[in-house]
Image 1 (cartoon, helix red, strand yellow):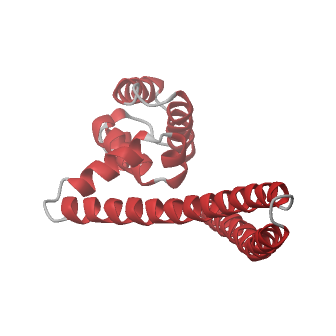
Image 2 (cartoon, rainbow, N blue to C red):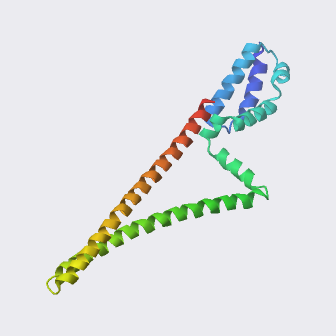
Image 3 (cartoon, rainbow, N blue to C red):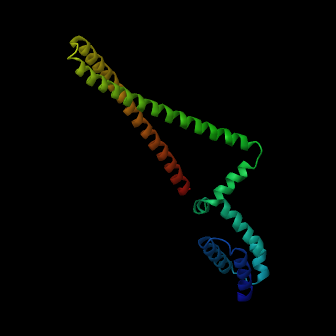
Length: 195
C-alpha cells in the first residue's frame, strides 16, 4: 500500500473534521484508517474513488452525525437547531405559541385550584377553632348560645375533615400523575437509546 496516498488522504480528512468533538473525531479517523487498510486501497486516487474526496467524506460524516441519535444526546445544541428549524416556518410559530399558551394556562389553572382548596381548608379550620374558643368563653354569659356556637364549630370541623381528605387524595393523584409522566418519558428515552 502506498503510505503517501493514505497519509495525504487522512491528513486532508483530519483537517476537514478537526472541529468535531474529540470522541467523534477519534471514531471517524479510526474508521477511515481501518477502512482504507482493509480495502487494500493503494493510491490517493483509488481512495478518492472509493470514499470520495476528503471534503466529500467529511461532509457525509457530518450529515451522518447529525442524524445519529447518540450524537444528538451527547450534543444538545443539535436539538436547539432542530427547534429553530421548526420555528423558522411561518405556520409553525403561531402553533408553537398556542401550544405553549395552552400548557401554561392548564398549569396555572391546576395551581389555582390547588391553592384554593388548601386556603379553604386552612381558613375553615382556623375559623372553626376560633369559634370553639369564643363559644367556650360565652358559655359563662349564656349557656344556650355558647352550646349552639360549640355545636356549629364542631359541625364545621366535621365538614372540613372530608375536605382535607379530598385535598390529600388530590395531592396523591397529582404526585402519581407526575411520576407516571416521568416514567413514560424515561422509558421512551431508554427505548431510543437502545435503538
